[in-house]
Length: 171
Image (tube, rainbow, N blue to C red; front, side, top):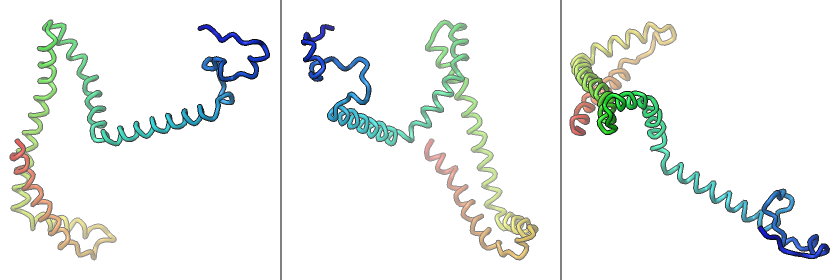
């Protein structure tokens, strides 16, 4: 860059014409420059905070997706080396990951339906067993928990019986 030509007596007194972007210290900043730096920093921080608040529900999913992607990348590369096609290896990689998860979900759904059917038919027996177990605890021997346990059992069973219906409606 070309410097402004000043006489030696003008160089010391003329700060506005001297290029100061090189190795300037904080003490050499003027008040308007400090104000501009602080306002820009504050606005940038506010915008970043608002952005993170806006996408807070997606951040966890993005982090988990990134971790899963890192773990399945070697499988994708291995399949890509075997098939020679990136699209086919991507589809196969997703199938290898998603199909076992779907099988586990289907199995857990059937088990959940069986457990909920049993719990709805044997509510009183389950409440009596839990009440007896609570009374064996030394400081709860005189507790009257059967009513509260009965209400909890009814609520849990009602929630459990609604859950498969909600899942069926979603599918």
